[in-house]
Length: 157
Image (spheres, rainbow, N blue to C red):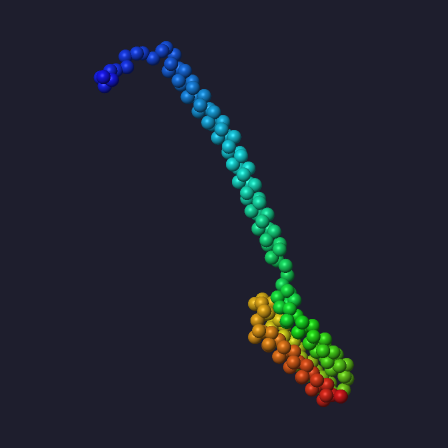
C-alpha cells in the first residue's frame, strides 16, 4: 500500500530559510565549543608537561646525592677509617726523620705510588659498588703500605 505513494505535499514557506538558520546556529555553537575546548586542552597539556618536568627534576635532585665510599660500601669505609691513620702516622715518622735522606725520600715516593693505587681502587669501589675483590685489593694495599712503612721505620731508627 505504501509502496507506490509519493509525498505530494509541499514544504511550508520559509522552511528552507529556517533550516539553513538552524544549521548555521549549530555550526557556530560547535565552533564555540571547539574554541572553549582548545584552550582547556592546551592548559591540560601545559600542566601535564610541567608536572612531568617537576617529577623528573625531583628525581634528578634526589639521585644526584654525591657518591661517597661510606654510601657505597660501609666495609670499605670502615677499613679506610682504621688503616689510614696508621699509615699517616708512619708517613709522619718517616718525614720527620732527618737522617738517611735517600732512604726516606725513596720510601715516601713508594708510599705515594701505593697511595695512588689505593685511590684508583677506592674510586672503582665508588663507581662499581661493593665488590669483594676490590675490597680485598684495598685491604692488601693498606697492609702493604703499613708493612713497608714499618720496615722503613725499623731501618732508619
